[in-house]
Image 1: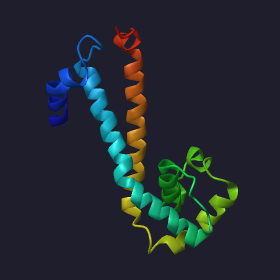
Image 2 (image 1 turned 30 degrees about the vertical axis):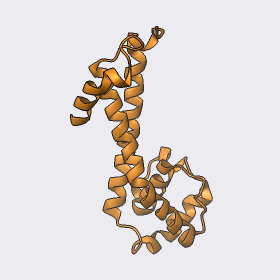
Image 3 (image 1 turned 120 degrees about the vertical axis):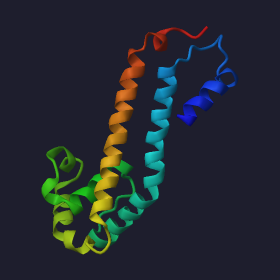
Length: 147
């Protein structure tokens, strides 16, 4: 709420009125997207560290993986019985076999509850991002040329 208040009060400096129409829905969308970005920022370091553990324990190099793939890998390692087909499709058969075979080796490295919370938070952020994009695309003012 404080961010929305600040944006409203600074809007005339940030976006001149003659160039763009900004309403509460756009400001709210921007705030939601900012919160979603913060989710990635705050979880980046722990998830990259988890990737290092995966490399050390299972020999799987995760350096090119995005944060959602890392969060999914950790969730599969911690909760293999709850892994969905969609989650498993992100990995090779060999990676999944290594996750399963080495799961017990991660017990002292990963806090299962925290890992599940991070995964759920990452999923929720991506769901919100898709929802905001759909909302913005459906707004008529987003399809009008800037004058």
